[in-house]
Image (cartoon, rainbow over all chains, first blue to last red; front, side):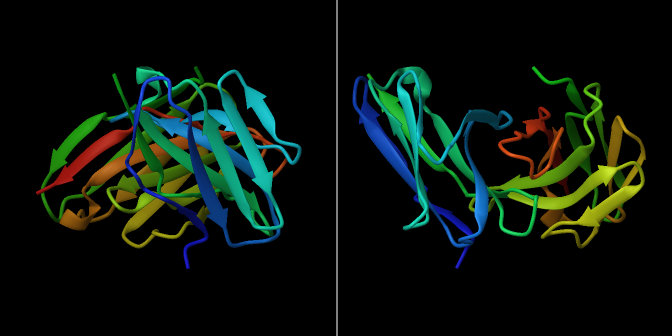
Length: 110
Length: 115
């Protein structure tokens, strides 16, 4: 079982839709969680960190569920510019090296 | 944007030739990483460094070596390139590893094709 798993998608949604991604992790001792965004043929960039209490940044909301060992990303009012691959990243549990999921592809269409 | 550059940005080489990729940072960050990204595999760690001359292997280190003689430079060498090493290579840096929500910053990537 891979340490960090994501549904690769693609998630194909119309503009204005709400879409949610989940990411599961296997190491219960993991301590830090992130969502990165990667545009086609570009480098990954941090979208947001995921805190235990959950956090929100504009249209984006991230949640952590330690009991079930998953993190989620909710995007409200999707824009065409949200089209990208979203990478889940988990770190901790005896290593400071982050582990990346394979990414979830989002396509927002007019 | 974090000051990370990679060179070359694109390279085509032949099987069996040595190749060196360079990552240069101007942020004075302690930690540096080399990843490769392939369809269906996501980002996979090749090697990383936690200081000058301090390096360690990642999950896909076979066929690769690294060196870090200065804080700002982290070199990745393919001793004898193979077609399976055709990939996009990303360098990343971070200031504090494992300390809270410290993020990684990525370079623009190098597209390597081994014929």
